[in-house]
Image 1 (cartoon, rainbow, N blue to C red):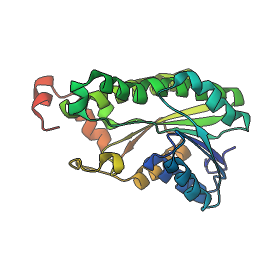
Image 2: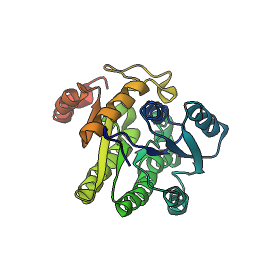
Image 3: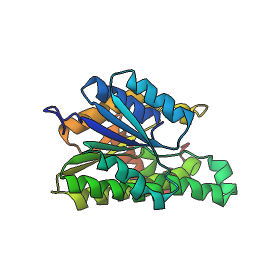
Length: 251
């Protein structure tokens, strides 16, 4: 169960090598989270991440999970919930893709969409059902401001995040009143390995800043969190910009 400050004692991360997710886990462990499950493809990187969190004093376990294998999600994630209640699920599975390559290679584009959206729908529903059965918990979904309005420079990634965001909103409405809290997190440009080499956007942020925003959102039981908060105003303006004008913006 969560403590009096809303900090989960147990955490399941889908996408166990995500830098944002691991920054969140470190922050939670310092604040009394004791059990962490890292779900991801069995790789040295996943084991290294688990070892780093164990060094902070948490009981860290790994579970094989592949967003592109939805038929295995129920069995893989069911093993986690069978071990005991999970206070928080952090859905951090996602790939940026390569816009230029993905436009030329439809199969590559489909892989981005399947990872960011289809895999999230499947795993999200499995986790939502388990959280509802136990009667409590938070499902935190890492979306993106890119999903607010598709931009020419990354519309494949942006469209997949738009689908994820809409799914999470609907899921939150479906679970309202069940004891399960769904929170959507919309970061802007985050300085991570995934964005290394890309031109930095205004209002860029860090995994640690996103982690801090997630913690505050949990305490407040927020439904939507923008990181940084100023992006809410910026994206509201961009969302309503005439299409002809939006098309000419250097985005």
